[in-house]
Length: 110
Image (cartoon, rainbow, N blue to C red):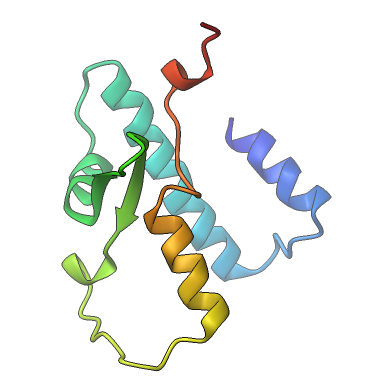
């Protein structure tokens, strides 16, 4: 799985020889490992990170989306900057479920 990801990044001309890419990819791989372990009922430290950072929100239409909050694990202060009209609309779309993660059940034919 990780080699396929790496090939995909190379195909996209991502600078895979950069040290920061290596660190980022290492974290992605660990999170994938945590996902797979959880599916098999096994524990992995990455699951604790996900449990702290990610909340699931159910929208009016019943769809669910994930919200990631880095401030629960990092010392990040929220900035209060004015939002552009386009950004406000995109945030509203996200809140209404326009950008959602689906589980396998959502892909089954009725």
